[in-house]
Length: 98
Length: 98
Image (cartoon, rainbow over all chains, first blue to last red; front, side, top):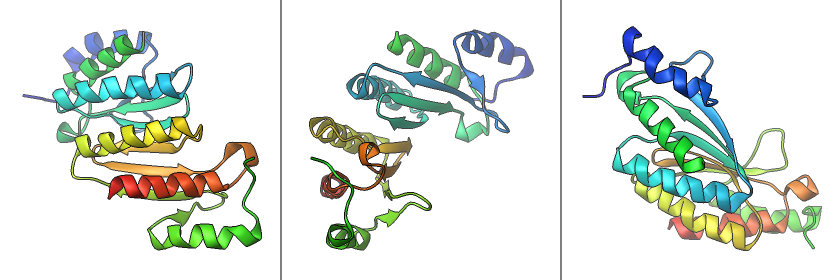
């Protein structure tokens, strides 16, 4: 079952993400990152690949796109904060953007 | 060439869009609309179809997606406000959402 990250699991899951450019959202138990691509085709192509994983895992991002830039916020609505699913989707986003 | 909508062309192009649920963005010469779909697959599927037209016309939306909801803002960066391209893309978005 999905549950909110505990104090023990939080560090090991989030620290590698912070090192990869993710950061906490001000005033929310959520993480955010801005991805910048070469152009719109690259940006939306990445979103399409992410979308398939998000649907497969039934865990969807909050995201906005302006041309080559995609701003992402991840949090788990059902638990009111960060869960392991957010870390999993964040890692997938990073790997798909490489 | 793309140019900012004149006082004469503005009404005829924008009124039908206002009737279809578009509205002016506060403090900006831009239009916005919120599209709500059945679920994420429907929402992102629509975005993918819009994305292809946007790239084909080299005119891209500012948009954000949270699960089944997509918020769109249209404006033409090159002219610092609304152009006929925005009306064209807005109509395409509406027809693809039907």
